Length: 84
Image (cartoon, rainbow, N blue to C red; front, side, top):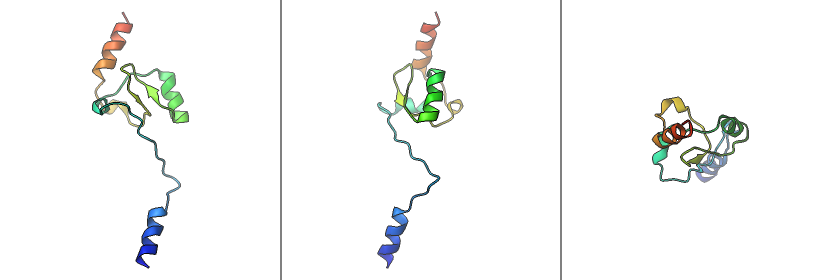
């Protein structure tokens, strides 16, 4: 009986939960920063769940508040060069 109960708990899925794959293609160091991405791409990602590409090359699906992280120094440098 204990096995049947355990299997039932393991196989139960919450209908209101959502899982997004971590499709980050780097060593994880860029996870500490907020990155620069085209605004329309962020909106598109929010609607479709598709990944975005930051100026520094990081690829991921945004799912956190960027205001809680310092700006990526590489993105900032690239952006400043573009504005010259």
